[in-house]
Length: 98
Image (tube, rainbow, N blue to C red; front, side):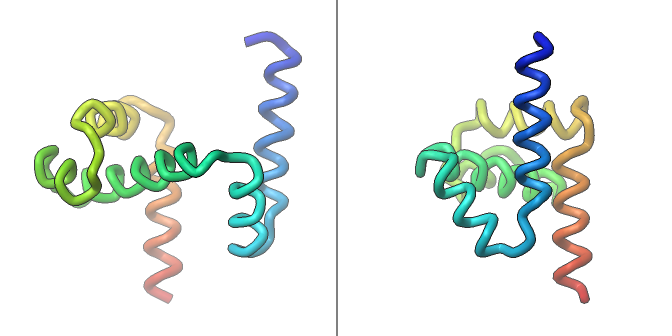
């Protein structure tokens, strides 16, 4: 990854971290993503949630409406990735329990 790409990526992360409300977040992602891109994010997060809950690939595919290839990709991220799915889902669960 070249330095310019790294700087742009860092700016994107800072932009996301600057959002303060769900409304601001919805507006930003509505502007920056296509409907299909946003739907893919939503599906992947739901797949991760169901995988971490112990659901099998076939049940997830049926309930989320995504391919087993996507489920496999998310499972690989959960197993070998940097822990992003686990972090956000844990924080969401903590917020819901309050």
